[in-house]
Image 1 (tube, helix red, strand yellow):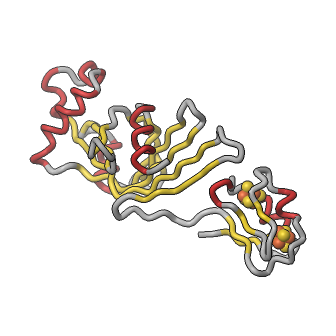
Image 2: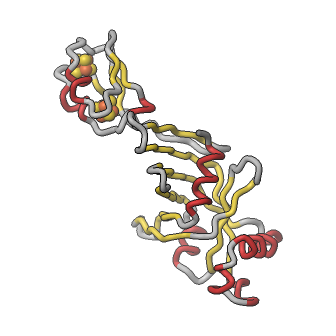
Image 3: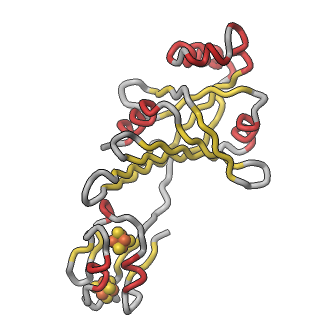
Length: 208
Ligand code: SF4
Ligand code: SF4
């Protein structure tokens, strides 16, 4: 798995749940279709179309912080975070035409020249979280693209560990290895917190 493959999977799912932040700071989630990728051979950026009158467009222009999530038919969850910006005015027409050519359904929604009410946004500088629930143990990985930054998440075992093994017994994914100290395999960790709760000496710390 890698960032480009994650983005291809997002585009293949086709309809994504897309979260923005409104003027009061409240989350707003929409379904967004018609995702295009660039560059084609190794995608690093997402492009999508919306209309100027929509609250969605207003929120993107005011505060582009965005997060989208998809669930694939293979029980993979992919979450993409970044900041959305409109593509330059001089490129809007070409981008609108490209997205309409790739997504013919849009021509039903915005027939003829009515597509000119649209704005194409770019989502770049990404943090991508990939999560495969179909594996046992589960597999997770985080990727960044461009200036994207990923916030540390999950748990870590510190040197305060006394080696009692309670965390390993409580772990639903059996992803804690014995040692001095015991160690969590982060790529298989659910972030469920069971190890954190059972440790008798508070040796398990939350990241972030
Ligand atoms: S429960 Fe705490 S002390 Fe016991 S092995 Fe796990 S981290 Fe170490
Ligand atoms: S957070 Fe849950 S899955 Fe992760 S190591 Fe701790 S008990 Fe295991």
